[in-house]
Image (cartoon, rainbow, N blue to C red; front, top):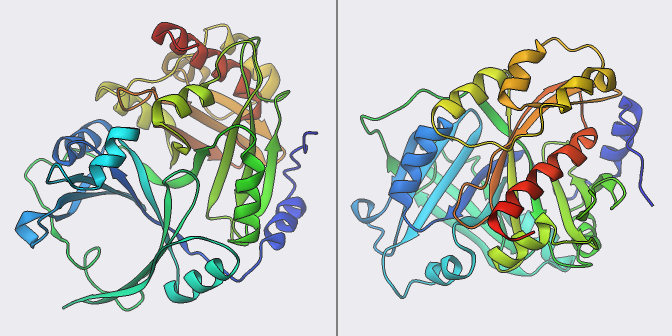
Length: 381
């Protein structure tokens, strides 16, 4: 059964109130990706996505086994990390998954309590609370395992006044391209295996106190060939939203199955980043080399009949391939990049919310048909 999404303020308040308060989260602290060549990956995200250089840790800072570059744009922080030796365990991750998200770090007031509360509810510890100190103060970290090899790190930085984290120094290269207007992480989507979605929905509810915001079944997210299931989990203040996807039976291989095959298991499928002007952001990204999925031009012939009046001119939206959807609170504009790696795994969503709290259900069919066209070219449909 599909839970119909009611976007009324009362309904959203009810959902948020269902999330328990034992694990208050202030927001996403950073997302760390393991990549094959961090220096080159940093240049890509700076050039193509407009991220700004922020901090660095590596040989020059006394770190002998890996190199990490920190990029920032708005409230979004990415760490790109590569190993420095053939026998480093990061290489095991890279061989299995390719470039991908390893750590989703959550900003909390008390990393020790966060670890204690989640592990006593059944979370598997990645590492116990530890304090790291430098001349700028101290940071406390702890971490738990989630789906696949993805890890949540709890970061407590209330007693730290440094640039980023202990062990990092300022990274201030001459090359600093203009940002693209990205503001914050809107949501992050995890792909899990067959019949595993409810297991991880229960994990976020029982272990982390999240509530279910919305669910979509294979009637909502399907085409003539493929289907998937999805449930969206949110924390109490609504700052963290984790949709969880699993495959559903279809005539051909779904995008979730393709992801699981090439990633080698469950993992973060895409990161949705918000902007206040999606036309300017996507235009700039396109001009810098980012490739986006495109829906047929016929999509725009009837879209306003479905979503009603919008503030934007339809012409630039159609030229860029930006999708439109509406709920009871307003409308949203969204577009999805093609995979940012050679493996068809990780991609990004660019989203602008004009009041809408939903996730673009009205665009699912057109979007997934566009993905299927890409799968067909890759020979993986």
